[in-house]
Image (cartoon, rainbow, N blue to C red; front, top):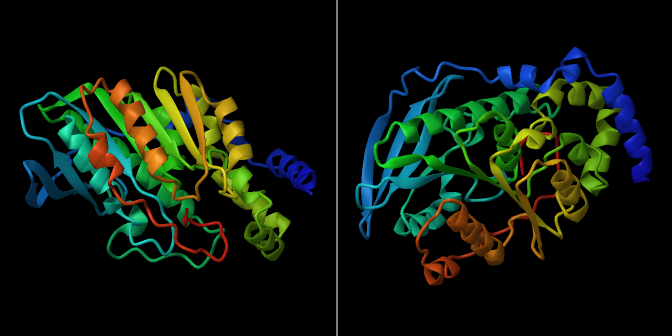
Length: 332
């Protein structure tokens, strides 16, 4: 059955418009912006967490509105390594926002890391989910998040306590897709951790997941073709092969029906070197082992002297909410 869908996929992309034939350089230029545009940072206060400052702030989004964020800053003058953490979009999760990685960021602060944790557009006040799963909203949200992360890099390198040569990105699920695009676009980020991300959107759309099969039957092939053609230029598959010299660490869940072992190995084969892949006996939320491996990899890549792994391993695992079935809109 999957081979039939694969054949259909080839037909869908063969009928895609001119944008699918764009070169890598042309696609990258879609993300051009003026880095001198004022961030207009607004400070909403901070908390002292055992010597670590957790600052609540926001900055202007190039696509309108403001980007809510936490900035987690260790004591001292630095220069510190920095990590941008970007959360998943799983419906039903209480951590479908910048809080997903806050505990991890606090542990990393003790190792000498400044962390920026941002709310994605769908987690911001006033966002209304479109009822049309094949409408433009998903593309618009993903593009905005990519640009908001790039502005986050601007924010970090503007700080005297951040080492601009030691900046990493950690993205989960939807934001792993964002990171897949960024890896070929944003070269100021030296290391990318991509957790359970669908790095070729057609793999998700054409998967054998029961909910996705039902969705395809409901929406129709022609509508699916148009959706894939519209999304093609923003598909991470076009960018992760150009991530070098940035390093990639792909983390995937064996029991994840969308981004499990098969898709993960496919994504890994496409990605440029240097790269690492690890699979976990876990759901889409991953687990404590994945967190430990992620931090260990970041410690090496960011040249951190030490990490409190005892504190890290005591952190609670991210709960995996029940989701009745996928749709073609951010929910991963």
